[in-house]
Image 1 (tube, rainbow, N blue to C red):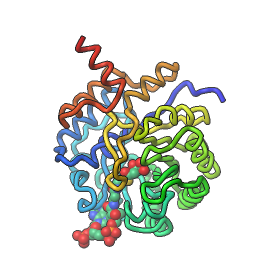
Image 2: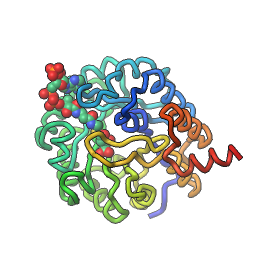
Image 3: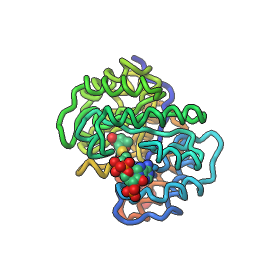
Length: 302
Ligand SMILES: CC(C)(COP(=O)([O-])OP(=O)([O-])OC[C@H]1O[C@@H](n2cnc3c(N)ncnc32)[C@H](O)[C@@H]1OP(=O)([O-])[O-])[C@@H](O)C(=O)NCCC(=O)NCCSC(=O)C[C@@](C)(O)CC(=O)[O-]
């Protein structure tokens, strides 16, 4: 399979990246981060989630953040909505895309959204219908497609099952997420293969956490299968609050460096992206969790 000439990146830093931060991050900082990401050329940004503030307090300012963004033409702003209550609140903030989020593992589904996989699909179905009726795009995140923090290895058949349910309720594209970053290339390819039973490759996004340092290899393995949409997090921010020990997504800086080095276009200005990562890392009081960002910042510092 020949590699694509262009890849679409979705930066999930403002949502996936910041949801797990213990220290409060003011809405103004989140808004500034979104502005810096779009200035760097990101055309898809996962901004926030409309979930219970008791479950994820860091996302309680969802409406304020969505309301404060100066939107740029051509940029798609997405938000997570686990149920109709979340969707109705999100609708007022005019997202371009909503994300329902399920899991290939029963245990993770219970821990993360307090219901079984089957119940989650029942909850998502009216959300998907309402979003499509309102002209809003719908993505489905599939967690634990390789491994689960509670159940261990997850079989590709579980991924195919969830992907099939997502397709049945009208989800337009899905994320194959390695939530705890345990995947290695061939296992990730099996999860993608299972997803391809129900979704066209153009409607599949790779979402790889980098806990075991495998995310770039997994990205390449997905690219070799024709996947052209990937999620990543500026400065490698993040981790899911219901997946203890899992680190952030692969950093957007590392993915962009790899893709550009392979002659694959992203439309992203790596220097501006590194600035965006430095901005949020400075606020959080730590170095970016990205080898490329650290190398570029060191080089700049001489
Ligand atoms: C799904 C629920 C809400 C079920 O939580 P529940 O407790 O079962 O919900 P409920 O319907 O019984 O309602 C209980 C309370 O929550 C409120 N509530 C109910 N819904 C909402 C809402 N939408 N927004 C705001 N409030 C809400 C509701 O109003 C009520 O409030 P009370 O009467 O007690 O004051 C909860 O489990 C939840 O919020 N979970 C979110 C967990 C989360 O955000 N996880 C991180 C995102 S997923 C992720 O990071 C993985 C991903 C996508 O990146 C991919 C990967 O790497 O795997």
